[in-house]
Length: 364
Image 1 (cartoon, rainbow, N blue to C red):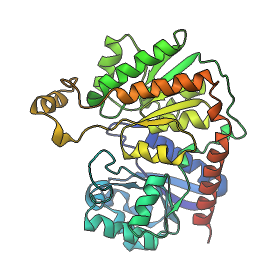
Image 2: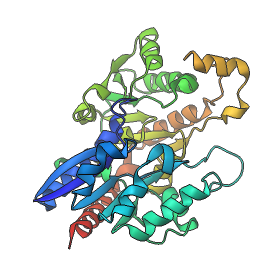
Image 3: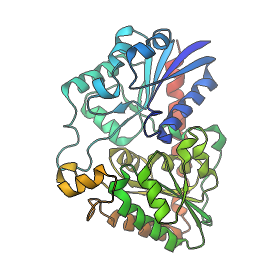
């Protein structure tokens, strides 16, 4: 039996973002299917003293979606250099970025020399290094990370849905809307989205799926009489809310992934570089950019409102993308959502690439 450690991005003591748990669970499922393994999961931002024992005794360490961010070496992965220095074999599965796609200027200027140096060490020492989207892969090419290969998101993997295909003309009886990150910024967009979906599908049951902790979303659902499912409270099973959905619309990339892997129609409002990564990678036009203005552009009044988790005065996020998305869904609905037919082939290729990468990482 091999000792395997997964370095997880799931913030158990923070937002409890259920999408991060999905990434970890999907990777663990693949490992178990191809290796007699004891799997230990550790938090990416823990102290080295707390995680050193299982890591130093591991046969292999997997990073479940290495989160490429500013100050990776201090705030995001404070012990990543320790792992590299230890000589324990490790691999990166489905790295992802949150590049500043909303800003004027270039994409690649925000990372420090120390962060780029650390990524260079990862590139040179990892047994396997894959990325989950075209934007992340483009960054890796730009940064000279020549071992990185685009494979798609590991979170698409789930044997329960093997063999399922997208079909056209599905009747829309149940819609799940996923909640936004930074909800105080996006309440106006969420409201437009909810109203548009209600008008498009007046007889459908609409539920908001809360992927992470948010008092702001609680208040929004209560004041708008919107059914709210706190799926983050069941980190291993909460995403099964998409089993019964006919349509997902919203802001969470792993709501998008969870619906698509179940072969349900899905549309995403891209909030940042993470959403953009999927928009550039999937073979269908099923997402619209909905980026927020830079914090520097906010008035003092709106900054104060954000601090108090209140809706912004005037707002800094356009509601036009939500209106565009509604127009796209209406057009696609009139055509029976036929654009989704065949998309399962690309998702299947993602899974094949990911499984192959894990097997390669576990090989002698």
